Every structure is written in C-alpha cells, then in structure tokens.
Image 1 (tube, rainbow, N blue to C red):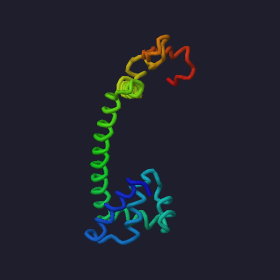
Image 2 (tube, one colour):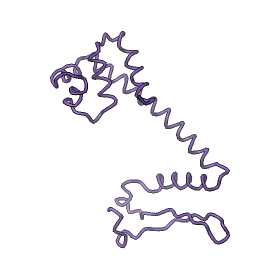
Image 3 (tube, rainbow, N blue to C red):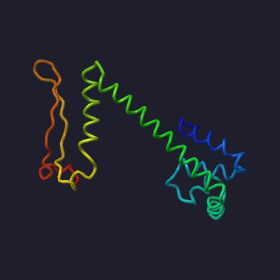
Image 4 (cartoon, rainbow, N blue to C red):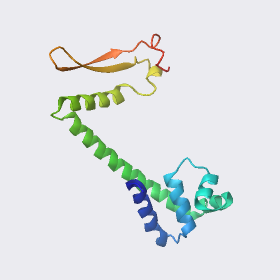
Length: 155
C-alpha cells in the first residue's frame, strides 16, 4: 500500500469510532477516495456488496459528512505536498549541476509559458532545445513550432 493510501486509511480509521462507521462504510469510503472514477457498481464489486447498498451507504449522513471531511483533509495534504514539490523544484533550479538546473528550469518554464489551451489564446507553441556546443558547453534556446508544418502537433 503506498504512502498516500496509508494516510487515507489512517484518516478513515480516526473517523470510524467517532462517526459510528461499520466495516462496510469504511470500505466504501476508502474505495470512493482512492478510486474516484469508479462507478457504484465497481465499488460494490470491490467491497463485496450490491450497487444498491453502495448507493444507500454513500447517502447516509454520517458517510457523506465523513467523505466531506476526509476530502478536505486530503486537499490539505495535497496542498502541503505542492509546497514541498515547489521547494524541491526550486532546489533543482538552483543546483550547482548545470545540466540539472537547466532541465529543471526548462520544465518550470514549459509548464508556465505553455498552458494547455495556448492555441485558443493566440500564443505560439514553443519547444525548448538544449545542445552541447563545439566548446562542450550546454546551450539552451526556444524554438517556435510551426503547427502547420509539424503533424505531431495536435491543435
């Protein structure tokens, strides 16, 4: 079980006694949080109950409140993870290893300068290119991509 799933399981266990949740409630809540795209049928198969039971359990007030509270807790944990990730990326950008710093910088710039819907905003798609020049030094540049000439670009 990975670290995040363990945290979710621990949080659910914290609510078990205070919210008077039974084993089926706990399993359904766990499945709902760890597999958010699953249908009620898929949750039922995983938990070993019928779809109607999953539906009824998910609509019980104590289960709804627990899901809401756990979702807030998980959002908080994700926000903390984002902060840690930003600090780690910052360290990589400031790395003394030029290649690591350059690749980290390119990754940050690519995500900031090239939003998913850039074509709708009239922005030109760009490509970051890094090469070793004749002197053995890394050089980085950007190239505008001609979307008409490059069939690999999905517009």
